[in-house]
Image (cartoon, rainbow, N blue to C red; front, side, top):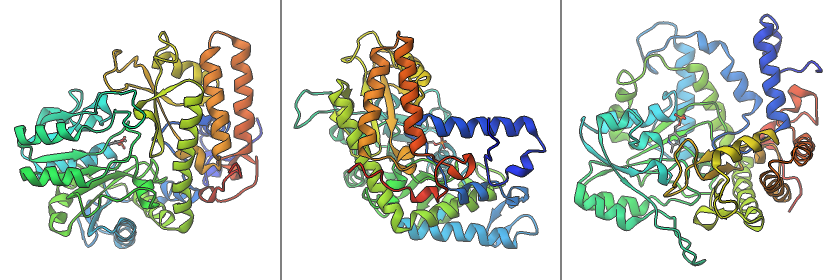
Length: 448
Ligand SMILES: *Cc1c(COP(=O)(O)O)cnc(C)c1O
């Protein structure tokens, strides 16, 4: 294998050849297989550099100007910059950029707004909600009493395909259960979610509203989706999905809740913040404020529509009939009654197509097996792919699944995937393939 760099600090990694070799392998995997996991993206070299910086050495419990350790002059400026950029990007009054992950951001908000045992109304996991929205498997359901809403039944009516958030149910449950908090947002829901109907229902029962935009944060920053900031009381987001930053999260809220939220994150839930990641969040917020990012967000949505249309043409049933955002949920049953999400994910992996199995609404199979697949366009749009490439991807997925017991067919697909990926290298500067450029500025392939 030619010697390639896997990060801006690669030279130092030669001091640990075992780890360096694994990083090289992972760069190779990300560059030669299709990354269609809806919650993943390719960050810019600037984000990678900040994440790999000396800020990882620093302890800085507390907040800018109020730290429990010395030596935080620079750190304070870094965190202030991240907070100011987050506020400007989303038009928020207050930002907390310390949550290590989306899950901890959500738990911190519950910790801020609720007493143990309080009732929360949120979307059920198998209907598209997140584990931290009260799944029995999550610690959230041990401390708070979750009541779950879901989506409307599937319908064959093209005007109202169903599988959209059931607002009658949200309103009924709110009236009956008197939740202290209503949670909007989802992890496997291909449609736009407006905050206003949730706000109305929350107001009618005196509940607070939290909107978890972990997935569409980048689409909101890029103005491809409307923003719930200012409508919801609190907005949580991850920085590593469509927002294309480092792994992590942030919480946005009105000034009135700033102190409560901050102290629920630290010392309520976390210890020392990851200031290297916070610096990388600042970089990502800065990138997301550029005009190119709005163009990126629009292309992500356009590519998702093109992929959805092409998958439907290949004979797949799409949950809710299509997509408004970056993700698509496939119901595999009409395509092949025998094919589970688990088997489909595994055979697609062998073709170099990386995505995840997912439950679909009212899935008869378990969460480990499932009848669905979830895929998204955020990462490969960053790499520069366009609508024509989405048509090819749909064909490669369909061919793989139809011919899953035919080794020759699978190796032909693997070759076609490699050829497609070679045209859109996410990190040309590390692999020596393609033209070195800023990953964030990836242009359309010209596919129309
Ligand atoms: C991804 C996601 C999270 C959790 O993010 P992690 O960083 O994996 O903890 C929370 N809520 C929703 C809706 C998500 O999609």
